[in-house]
Image 1 (cartoon, rainbow over the protein chains, first blue to last red):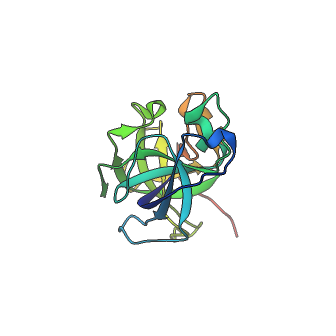
Image 2: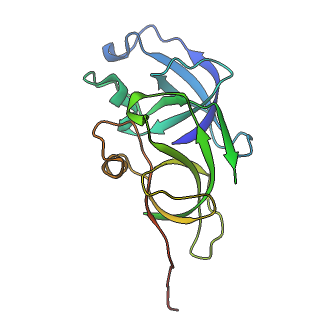
Length: 88
Length: 90
């Protein structure tokens, strides 16, 4: 999983049926120092995250697990909203 | 598997139910020479690792699920061991 900031959402009218009702968020991955790192991406949301929140997301087919038994065609998914993190 | 250093802890109240009770740690992958490599990531920990410890991680969904001991958890990385020593004879 990786930390990211939610920077937007995506509205897609014509899409795979299994994506019906699924929120798509635009994420900017961040490093532990809070700085943006790497490319932005679109992820499905299963926790009700919104723009401006810090979240963590999972990559790969596990992104679809929260929607089980529906096999959502996703390769990234937000699975938690971060309260805070502490560096040792 | 990869070697990594635990660099922090993450607190998340609102998360997918399969994460309940799981410990989330920030880990920084390192080379054999202990030099940071790539971006830090979050891994679930069921080994009781602590900050500053060197650990062995998997970055793959099925393996991470096995490590967590839960089926169908949306995880893609897990700590599977705490490293005592890495011995690479030259």
